[in-house]
Length: 313
Ligand code: BDR
Ligand code: CA
Image (cartoon, rainbow, N blue to C red):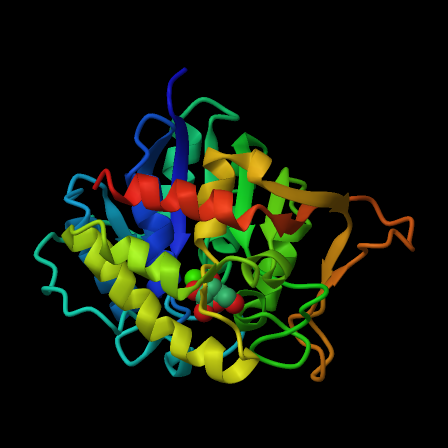
């Protein structure tokens, strides 16, 4: 079978970086058509830079990287340096990228790719605020029905919020964009905090990355070392949650995950609960299901997959 075609839309971010590395380490299953950077964890110039650093680390300077939207659809940008550090990729010391950004805007790349490739053959993998994807859908409504699937990291139900008491970061930063995506009708899989908080880089798992003895293994160990600081202090958890790699792992081994087909709506009005994913987990409304909302994961299986694939880079 030929590899599944994906576009990774991202705001790296250490966990985004690991998600990208996992995809690039899996060319038999995944063909990364391009990476589109969006403003999120840090401003756009840094996310576009970090995406290039990650591709160079993986030795994959052939993957085009496009810069996209530098601010949410209708709100000022909120960033997360308190989690990811000043550069967004704090932890390892990695060289400045030398590969250039691809010419053109990320939104045009998304639109042109979906129009060019056979309908139903391209999956979108958003790992940050949904601004690029929503802008593409608004500008070119004809592409919406051509998307094979969206597999995204965002939202929460049982874990509720990480950036506010009610909202998860990616959805909070651009709730209007998230609403457009959730109402698009595209087959959508959501990796909320409910599952990502179950894939923690414990000390033995971090040691396993380092023990790969490769630049990639070392960098991933150092990134997750840095990134765990925040969650350890805040949640008292055992290590860094690998939010975004859940998206890539799902594409590779969906059987590691379980969830429910439910209705998910986005709060865009209330100041108190802005960006909340109102997930009808208990099916108490008759609103139609619009997403597969993941709730659990085989965490050991996830780390076996991740470590084995990182060893290939
Ligand atoms: C999400 O927000 C970012 O900080 C992470 O990269 C992840 O995509 C988790 O809430
Ligand atoms: Ca991210």
